[in-house]
Image 1 (cartoon, rainbow, N blue to C red):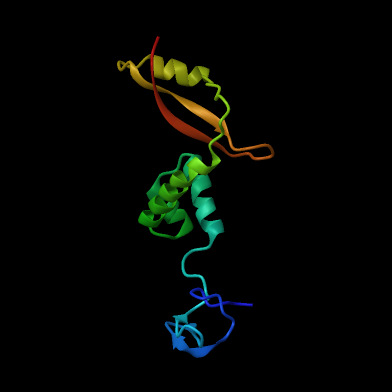
Image 2 (cartoon, one colour; image 1 turned 90 degrees about the vertical axis):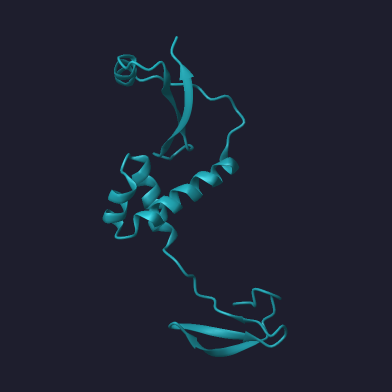
Length: 137
């Protein structure tokens, strides 16, 4: 059952339709509200994150999912801001891949190589890359 978002009361009535959504009026606190979710589904946002982790750009993800590239950018940014909740206090092992080392080792710059590869959890096929600058030895 739905409740008033302001006072959590169940004493409300229908109060018309605005922009094709049913509105309600709380009789206890005189608050008007709707209960339908506005925005894209969470599955679509998660798919955008997975495509981003696979290396696609914001514009290509937007074309593929038929949404704005600005929306994709904002979703990825919000996922990044929530990462602090999932940070693991244990030490992180640094994994170096041969092909990446050979490619980056041939570059003229001496900073900015090496990315941390972190597994998201057991049973998950998703891993994330964390930017961290390291000096070449």
